[in-house]
Image 1: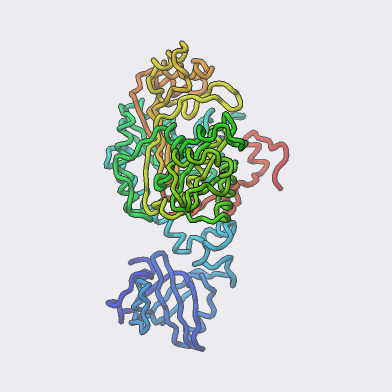
Image 2: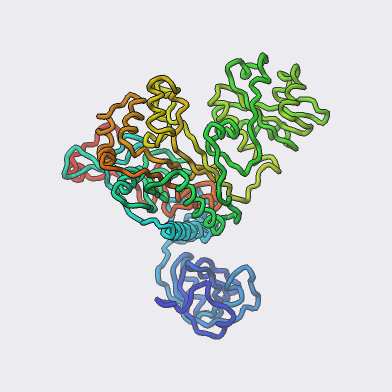
Length: 593
């Protein structure tokens, strides 16, 4: 080790006993035992070493230093009388001959105890993130992130992909989330936008003759935070392949991801290729979600016909009723009610329930509304004594959403129905190309308008002639899901201008609209574009899963808070009038005080 030290704080062992060494790091803790005797814990990036103070001179030096100051320690290594098997350096200690302050901590009190920073208020952690990151448990996630990104880069390069960086300043996108806009000083009244994703650029690379592209791409979206979504910016493993099909994309990721998850994950079991493929409509009907957690063995059963004619309002005609059968359930009434309340908060609708008692009779919850059809319900659902049945009822979309949340919560709450310690991947395929918009009441794109419709131009022409219902058209689009978390959306791209225009005409947009909104891509496709396909798994979400964290902010070095504020740097912040004038911008309306 060079620099100003002979060893790191995780390097010394019994074979170093008797050596003169120099260590540097943060003074983590001091434990005084007597007037001239103390144990000092010295911490650096690599680990900790115990320093034993035994003289009056060294004691005076230590007492004058606040915790978390950076110091250098020169001394002799000796074997510890009382070893600590939990530490890599637990067999030795260093007796100092010289202690020097390198960077003084000027505060007697810290905002939080470093090694317990994760117990502190999140706003405090973000404000003092540089202290939070000194906690080895927090730092570990960032190191994991670095190793995962390195492994992804190596794997993609080995698969013949070129890493190409795409622009950060680009044009505003008319689709997707809100843009972050950047005023153009030399072009008054005009704005750049930070890219929501490199989508158009990577497709343009395919038309340029590049065969396989990837990058660890920064993406910027002005959207609200969630546990698995960071506001502002995030990173994704962006990739695109020319002359490729859905199968080609699947083959690459099914080869790249499982070894990385098995190597770096909290759990060492990851799905092997091929990943399970589930059509979108089947996923919704079976799991109540297009991002199902396959570690849970519970599935939805339709009981709409079973409750026909019931006096219970939510079972009324026209509603969808879904059941989740949970065998060997020992939850109490109080636990079930709490569980249902949690589902209502997440899904926006209340679920129902009933049990099968030890005599095979229906009891509790909505059992009284099923008493007149008890035998039919028991037979149709295959119910056994000791079974809990969760029920979701309402309009189809809401019933499925409620059932999906109920399935997830029941799977985690009832022992024996969730194998937590593994990574289960699946592909969700055959997404609808179109849907009826909630606000417009008219046909709209369901997801990505640039996905190739399954059936190409032919199916669009049939829909135009009324031979095919547009709502039955699926897209060559796919999502990658792991443990109930959507890692990515991808698609076979619509690379043919004629098919693209026809797809947009279905939602009342013509050729001129396409040319105006997407001029570069449309024109490039007119010069002979290869069929191409791609996907972009989220790096932050991957690392969150690998680290076993519930919040994505735990794996980002300097995250924003839930309100998209950087409390460490004070962003967003006001700027001077001179800066605004240079950009030809005036701030109007209310501003935050």
